[in-house]
Image 1 (cartoon, rainbow, N blue to C red):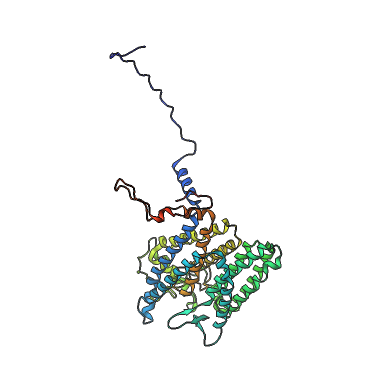
Image 2: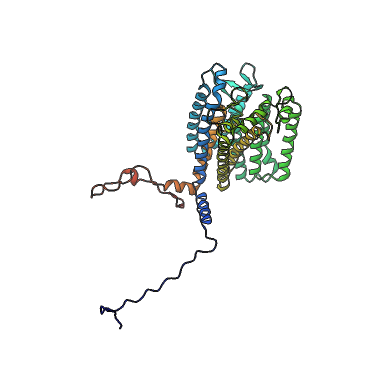
Length: 451
């Protein structure tokens, strides 16, 4: 055995390892995409998207209501924070409703369907009684409930139609009756048309459009055949066309699509000044509170056209952020409706998602000059407690449905508690774990691996 100068045997030389080549197509962009896809497919993604996006929209809406309504309040000889305080109070009450709805089981939601429908119909009938109903901007759809507070029952009619329609279709699906067209249409379509008639008696066509969108969403989720779906759409379109052509005000609004000048008698004044507000905002806006159009130039700056003020003060970055939040909320609602096996959850989640998405599209489309001005608020964002309260309850429904998914329930149960963890270091003797550590719930369903 050969040795070196020291007489020690020479150590065998280590053979070099061959270089490991990265698999083809494995680049940082692909790894980032894979990681994002894995995070996107987690069981709690829909839960966090619904909760996070709705809360951000509501908080940003309160801020913008405060900014957009100060001038209007001062013009009415009211304190500058008048509308902000009312919206903040409505948001607090709405948060309570959201928490209650998010903790209710589906059986309780279904039990509320008929009482809510009957209550909404009763209130909408009261609106048409002289001395009880209140007209606002030419539409008699309000009830005074004392002091400065008013109630718009048609906003609660949207929630009632979603819950009642979902419960009705779910019960018929359990009995396998949806294969017959008469069971799919009756009594869903007649009741929806009754609600539409009560709303149109007050002249509020914008809310009627949203209610029609909810009806079509429920029929589509129920699997209505194309000819049936097209028939109902044709009837609704014909009625809507008649209502538009017989009203000079609605025809004037239709003529303001894409307008760049106020026109004769300032017919398109609101639509044009909404475009002016968006155009003057630039990329990052003029700054919070620095809008010029809200100084009497833009009507309904804190309600129907609050998106225009947002574009002027927060710029393109602010408006795109609002659009992204609504897109995330809509995607999460579709995901909840698509992944459940409970028919009621599928219909209710799809109805709520259709309601919020359609209303957001109609409001933003009107501000951008792409659609006629329908007079509907931006959900969770515009001023109005009557619109905010049922919408936040509907968001609570989506949160409850997202929590009921077996994988999401398992992920929530397996999360580590924030309190009662054992601190690092300390004395050598281990402390006795706290009771809430030892009694942590375990998921009965399959584990999702998420913490």
